[in-house]
Image 1 (cartoon, helix red, strand yellow):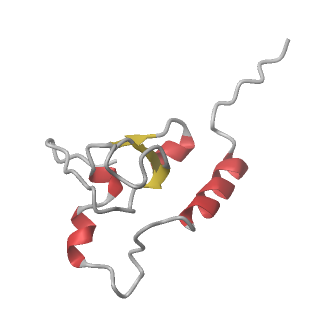
Image 2 (spheres, helix red, strand yellow):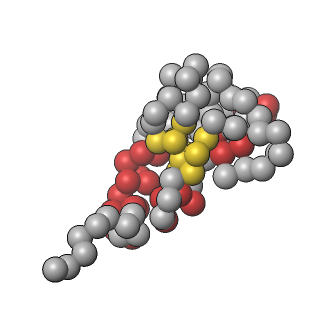
Length: 93
């Protein structure tokens, strides 16, 4: 019997998800009103951001902050929100 389990490593599917999900960003670094301090408060550096597995996990994770409007949603590592909480070890991604 073939193994039909999803591994998350379908390049075409991942690229389609990436492009579709980018439209849902809260903060875009290319916006003229993007504040300098937001560069240090991106999701990938938040202690409540958990990276997805597989190829999508290179840029995407899940917000687990109960006080964030994005709790339980996939977030781009370079996005951000007002509920950012810095990681104590200073890591990113």
